[in-house]
Image (tube, helix red, strand yellow):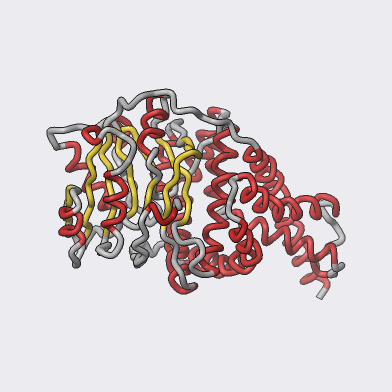
Length: 412
């Protein structure tokens, strides 16, 4: 029995040490999100854009997005809207054409998924007579701020090559699930994305609301066909020393799953893709970071190493409970982290989401989501473990969208 106790203590000490290092780093980085430099749009429209919408059976939501995009504050002759109708069995293509978009239909049962659809579309785009300075990507269920292309044009003129916009929710108050998603995104936008942008670290891509220089795409090729094509492409960029950057002052609104079953299926796909990409790239990114002594690459490797911020919060909360309630098996004889560190760090973890909502002026009813957040965190844990053992399953699962909201309804 004493041997078993020593093994358990050793595991707790090891996990505690790793958690302490990771939580210290992430807490310090998150503090970079406490301030925001106003980035004025200084450049007039110069860049042309191919706006790509990834769609699979999206007849319920595609029209509001196309209408929204056609009303952007940008010269209409400087951007075209393409809908990638990927293996659609409904009338998505017909609706897209009726609303003035260019519908590009693809049928391929062997290469299924958003990443393959984008790769196919880009190959067709490069062969067209008209060429574009940059490519913008959205999902069919999105809505967009009217200044989106103005901001992307400005960032490109200032030298950025890969840009991610603020990711918001278009249905945050549909259920406790959608509100939990929204709070998670509000926090991530401020304390992860903006924080890294302020500190000169690479940002992550969120799968939609991103802008990529065409020249870079032609140089690198898309090559991102995993379940998390956004993470894969961003990692490939960082591996080459090209850091994705952040645009906090233009938003893309995304539809979140309403029920827990749909939510867990979507997040399982994300995590399977994350583990797959991490397994293929963490070694090379870490090696390049150490060889070139670049913190940005090491930070990207850090993101690949720990799937989600929620894991750190969970471990620190367990340590907090062990110290606070004096639970014997959670308090080994050797304690790498002193009590003041555990209590302070855990307190900051729960304070930062509140500060993120406050600093980004989220409506008061949004704060209710902070109550649900711990329960939402718990639903991540089985996903993390199941995804790890099923990471080779790269079969795309489609999330059904049905909330045909107009941009005017969100911005009332």
